[in-house]
Every structure is written in structure tokens, then in C-alpha cells.
Length: 327
Image (tube, rainbow, N blue to C red; front, side, top):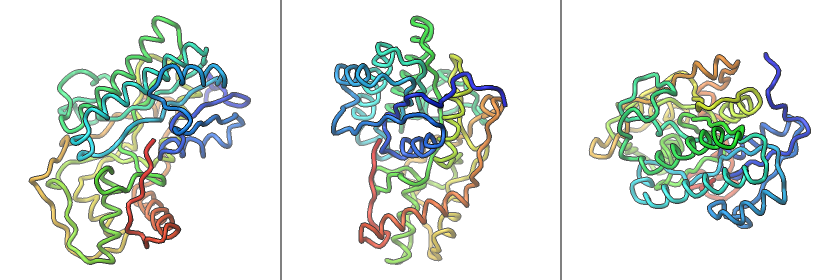
């Protein structure tokens, strides 16, 4: 592998959003790199507020920033809280990216989402598909904010010479995910539903027809890819981060039922929204940089379910309660 363009040993690295699923995975991954990891709780610093963010960055002087903080959620949360998803994520990107420039941060990695791509984008979707068609309506508010973050990084690179880059992970899952029934993405929502159904009985209702296909990546693989990009990539275009494989929602539901041990009926509700019909990224750019995922889907789902059950056991709810953690 080529020598890194930015070695992490001895650096000060701020993980913004360190308590969320992605942020906590990044902290785990950075622990072996020899860097000093900087974190700050949102009770002490509101990342939507420009002046406090700039002041904190000026005091801490990180060499690098990984911007993993976001207001996130599934289809229902996006539909009910469009203003939060647009405002919060725009404000976070603006405050942190501008604050990093003013503080002289040498490297910044901004994390987005595959929802930035048009609903009808070709599959597998290359980075060049950005802004080539209309967005998926069920998450356009979040997508617009993330597109703005990508463009901020590109604009700051062009105008100010900032070495800021962006990565677009596919659908993520793993320890630290949000298992809230009204705000979670499909994997934690299904894990929680099937866990409850093994106790309460079925059937399990699943939103949509089950036909859409999605690509899933374990969050520890995502963190590894992000650290690889931070060290080895310096360019204006954003970079896709995916697993290279997709699965239908129906197939995913049956796989999760098997992992959990649920033997009852599954009922799909076609009156609920499906979202985009097919999502899978073209990961050739990242693969060309020498990175590939390591965790298979069944292996990752089983590990995530064990984490969910263990966390629920400590909370005393037996595995059926909502577990929430927002970046």
C-alpha cells in the first residue's frame, strides 16, 4: 500500500458526533493509530452554533476533523421532521467546516449518505451521478443538507486551499444504532421488531412491499474505510463507501428473522412508502485506493443483535425496548 498522504500518528483528531453509531466506531478505530482523539459532548457544544464551534476549535487546535455528527432517522422521521433534518444538518456542516478553516485544520472528512443520489440513479451508482436527477422525496431534506456539505468542502478546497474531503457511506448498521420504533432505519427497526415478536408473538408488520433493494455496510467497516480515506485520499470528488452487494428488503427481513430466531409470519404493508427502488454504490474508487470491507452481512447482523440484547439486558428491558442514540 502507498504511503499515506496524512499520517495520523502524533496528530490531534476531533471526531464530531462521537457518541453516535458512526462516531463511536470511528473512536474505536482511531484508538490504534497513535493519534490523540478529541471529543466534546453536545451538552457542552451545540454544533449548529457557529461562534461556539469556532471558539472550541480555536482552543483545541485539532490537526484533523471527522464530521460524523448529524440529525438522522428513517423514512418516518424524515417525513415528520423535515425542518429539523434540513436545518440541523445544514447548520452543523456550515459551523464545523467554516470553523475548521478558521482554525487552520489540515484535514477534514465530511460524511454524507447515499440519499444524495437521484431516485432513478443507475445501479451501481458512481460518484458522478450526483445532481443528475430528482431526489427520493422521502428523504430529500436530509439529502439536500448533505449535498450542501459536499459542495462546501469542494468550494473551500477551491477558494481557500483547504484539504477537505467527503465520503458517502451506504446504509449502515451495527452497535450504537438507533432502535427507536419511530426514528430508526430498516436494520435496527427490524431487529427490534423481531426481538419483540419472539416474546410477544407475531405476526411482524414490515413497511412497504419488500421489493426495494438496498446495500448494507457494518459500521466498523465504514469507520475503517473513513480512516483509510483520511490517510490516503486528497481530492475534490466525494468517494462512495459501500459493501458491493445488495439485498431486497424482503430477503433482509427473512435473514434477520433467522438471526433472531423468529419463526412466525411476516406481513408486508404495500400502503407504506418503499423509498427508492434500488440502491447500490459503485465502490471502484475506494477499491482502487486499496480498501475492501471485511464483515459479511449475516455475521454483522448477528453481532449487532448480540449487542442489542446485551445493551437491553443492562437496561432491564429484556431486549424489547427502544434504544436511542443520535449523533
